[in-house]
Image 1: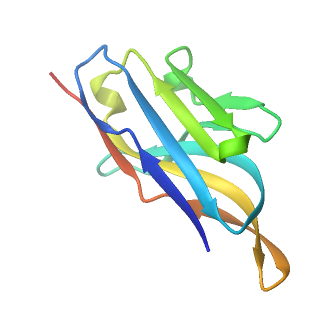
Image 2 (image 1 turned 45 degrees about the horizontal axis):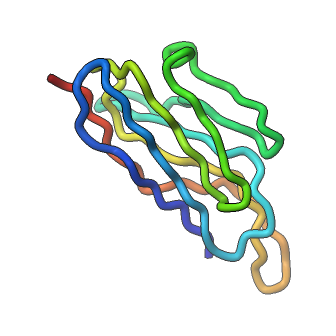
Length: 123
């Protein structure tokens, strides 16, 4: 079994910062792209940022210059450093990863999601 466990969400004032972490665990053979999505109430889940195994990064226009994604391949962990947070950044943030796992001797590649962590930006 493969799991993604997120941490680091919470309540922050406008202009503040938060750092999210997401660690993958289980029978992992390799991890390809890892990323963060967010979903505000009544809205669709949208990509915030993702990063390939080689370090290539992609950001949503709304967070460019404010958020930074990074990963530690040795720890199977992806991070999202969020700065200059605004109320419109309020959402549940979900970790996502494309992972090849070993199951019964076979390799299987699929998309995994974390359980989500709430980020609230409010004064």
